[in-house]
Image 1 (tube, helix red, strand yellow):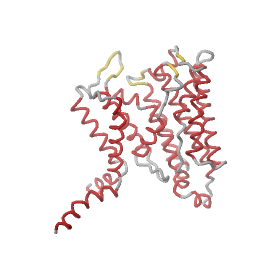
Image 2 (tube, rainbow, N blue to C red):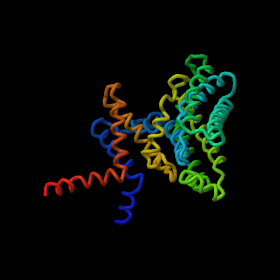
Image 3 (cartoon, rainbow, N blue to C red):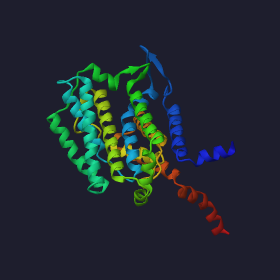
Image 4 (cartoon, helix red, strand yellow):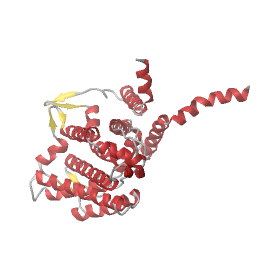
Length: 335
């Protein structure tokens, strides 16, 4: 039992989980009724339900980002892809059925991922630069689709995706859970997870082992594009509109933070989908806490950065060793 506890404390997920629990405890103390959940018309409402609902777009993108980072890549275009697919779905919803609009939006996300994958895998452009192209151009494409306007969506069936309820819970939660389970099955039940870790750890060695890195890289960027498209559908459905300028703005940074907080290294190799879930929940809970406490908007990002840096430092073994050794060094110098 003691060994199991020790192993858990040394796991990558331990400190993010501790930070999340502490954040929830702070909310319990400061915000009255934070854990209170009510039932209205068969639907569950409360701060915790709101956090679970609002985190889903970030979580879905972070899951795709986890796969990309696992092979030592990066995708900073996901926010723009979200805006493109949201704009496309909003533009198509008046001229076609909801299922077709959603499928076409997903296809557009897949094409965006395919573009990034081709640039990275076959033209060997640095992932940061390759995805920066679509990040820059994507907002312009979204504006062309919307005509520079905020498109309003008046469709109950489409609105159900982001605002509807199923068995008392927001429908978006089921979508996020489905994306997580499917990705987890791809990792556990197929060779994709092993290939990703192999490419991220040592691409040259993976080639000699018979892995085809270019195809895997292409597939992973396509998955990232689809995840961004799902997030775009959720966001536009939730707010019943598509805003090319602000939809998904800087969500790529929160997604990267969620992955890193969850224990996946930016240098590639082993990746932790469960850790990504905890990281995304931590970021959304932190944002909710900051807004609930009435902190001024101009210092919100500063506080968020300080908390995230603190969590990342606690994850670092070198930092923890430094903290433990500092008092000893003082005693030695005094002696």
